[in-house]
Every structure is written in C-alpha cells, then in structure tokens.
Length: 126
Image 1 (tube, rainbow, N blue to C red):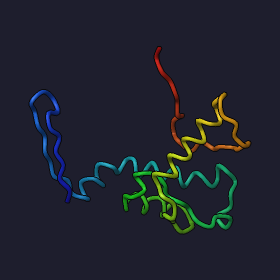
Image 2 (image 1 turned 90 degrees about the vertical axis):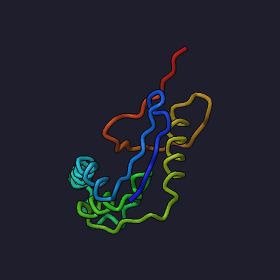
Image 3 (image 1 turned 90 degrees about the horizontal axis):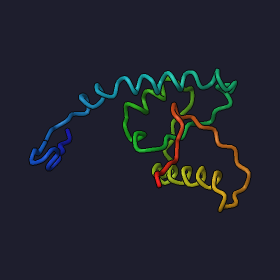
Image 4 (image 1 turned 180 degrees about the vertical axis):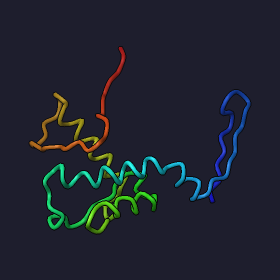
C-alpha cells in the first residue's frame, strides 16, 4: 500500500489517497493487456524466430511494475532481464535519437527502430 498527497491541487484543495497494488494493477489492466498483445505480435511481424531471442531487457519506469513483467513474460518465450539502468538507457536512447536528427552533431550511422505506438515529436513555439 502506498499513500500520496497533492497540496493545492485546485486552489486551496488538498488531495490525499491510499492505493494498493491490486487497485493499481486493476487500473493499469488495459495498458498491460495492450503490452502483452504488442509483444505477442512482435515476433510474427518482424520474422524473428523465438529461438533467436536470448533475453528481453525491460527499460523505463513502468518496467519496475511486476504486473508488466508478467504480461511481457507471458507473451515472449525468453527470460526477462533488468541488467541496465532503466532510466539512463531511456535517456541515452533519447539523446541518440536527437543527435541523429540534429544538424549540429555528427553521429555514426545507426538504425533506430521505433517500437512506440505513437511517434516522438519535438517542437517549440517562437
């Protein structure tokens, strides 16, 4: 069970709440099911044979959620690993993606495969 509080959420309104793991997993169930479906569709879509996979590295903040690891493990026929610093790996990937599209940095030729359901976009208003 975890508790959290938000001070002055709207004006002078403070909010505090307790949340159990079961409640969190119930709220996240649609996302977990979508992750499992995406992982199950991955091998046929790429033509990779299950025997070609050695392991799968989980990255990012959500990879710390045991329910996500269970969803991915149910869809892929290989062990899951967490040997990299998850946040650092995501930040390095974002920096590499930015360097590849920059006119000011030279980077070695690298092919990035975007596995997100939505593209990453950069923008600013002048």
